[in-house]
Length: 156
Image (cartoon, rainbow, N blue to C red; front, top):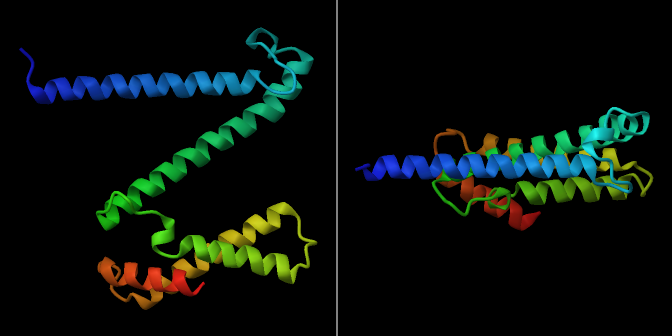
């Protein structure tokens, strides 16, 4: 007979393998699907090389990496604050990004390209994060960080 811990471990491994297979299938579907369907057998043709290797693959890899980074940052934030509902709005980071974006649109008078707007949003989020870390002197104390972040988010 298997112990409960062993059964739990096997179930977790099955879940991990199932989800990994699902990500792999979604990745393959992302590489095939588009304005024109390109089957895996056609990926090495001239048309497949252009669409799959130069357009779809970089986009798909970027989406996978960004998704993994978001999941990891969310897990770190939840572990750090010991709160399963923690999210970037908890510290006002989302509001800082919004202020950076709005400032870029207003100061750039709508003439900035999309990548510059994204950069300004990131700069706004980093700015509010650095301000919060500066005011919450010992970084090991998370309660003042949460209170200051909520207050900053409210004012922004």
